[in-house]
Length: 269
Ligand code: NAI
Image (cartoon, rainbow, N blue to C red; front, side, top):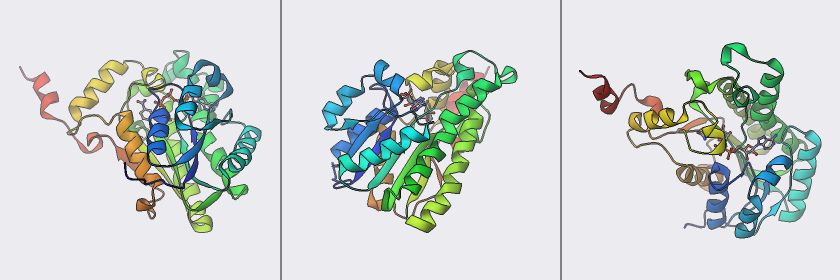
């Protein structure tokens, strides 16, 4: 451990269970000396094991639906009270498509479902940042990270409307990153992560084939949730102060690989 986050204070959204990327990140941030408030949707509190994570990392939990401005205002005000000052880092690790959950095909969306999934998966990132911005809750040289997937750039048929939500999310990172950078010296980035076996990941149809294919296509193999936690720590640290408005691929090289020998061999006679 390097004490990279010593004295830094943050908010971590989206730890549902021990497989969650946010869960691994919280553990890793704790190891690096960071302190934080954990938050998730009230319903996830009942399903998840977040209390265990809070005990392990000496954190408090504040429930908040990330689509509710009122919940977010309360979360950010209370977090500053608990942590004793402004925020240095925020992880947005939230995603959900109602169309995927209800088995609606991309060509047969229910638009109420589409709107809800868009609000949860994409607009919530704007809402989180707008609340932080208006409350002037971020310290200078703070860092805000959201998680995304490459379906925002290239088509993966079963990723459904989450592809569109991720494209929107990445655009918000750039647009808000400009204002947060100019006005507060705060950076905003998205990490485009390999397929990862979590509750949200496994919701994607054909996930087993999808993750195995990505593994064979990536020269370094898929990045795990643990690898993602490590990478996120670097983005929260002072070693990446001038990285902002980027979509950073964290995928073992998948996004720049046309085809791998392992995949070609499967098609040879
Ligand atoms: P996860 O299922 O453990 O986490 C998703 C979280 O979103 C859950 O904790 C859930 O309670 C939370 N959430 C849902 N609705 C919410 C709301 N209204 N307010 C607040 N929180 C809400 O799964 P995972 O994989 O850790 O997901 C984290 C992020 O990583 C998501 O943005 C996901 O799209 C992204 N990602 C996941 C990949 C994967 O293959 N698992 C690949 C690339 C990105």
